[in-house]
Length: 169
Image (cartoon, rainbow, N blue to C red; front, side, top):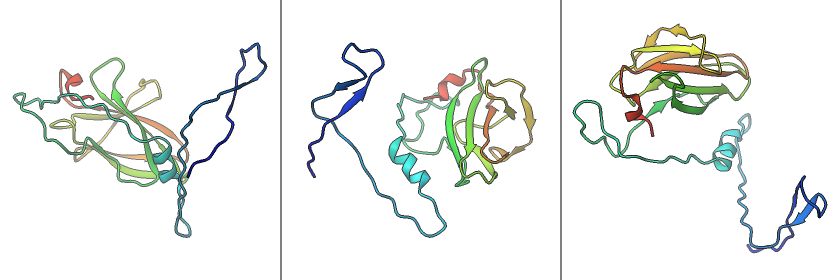
């Protein structure tokens, strides 16, 4: 489908007034989602609007420098109402930070599993700026977490790797 339309962009710093004509070719993506009764399409809509963009780097495991498998899981949070929003290296250490929120407002429990390292040595719930770490009991390759309705939570995982940068993409 080809459509012609005018596109105006609102600017706050312009001698031409608040609107400037943005002539030229523009690409728009649209999608329609259907759901079963009682379901929501929020997850599909967010995945469409903000697709995952991973930047691969050559990766080697910590046991001898052998290449890692071409595919596999880095992190797993199997709860459908929990949305992982950040996975990054800890600001002031070598831990792995995982930030997530309860997207349905009902509160949620989930097990968080980390597959990026040989083992998880410790797990902590921290505040948004990665301070005030409170230990969590380990369960398998991670820990069990509880999120209150609509909460944004931050967790730190110590993976027992001195050069933790080697596992991060």
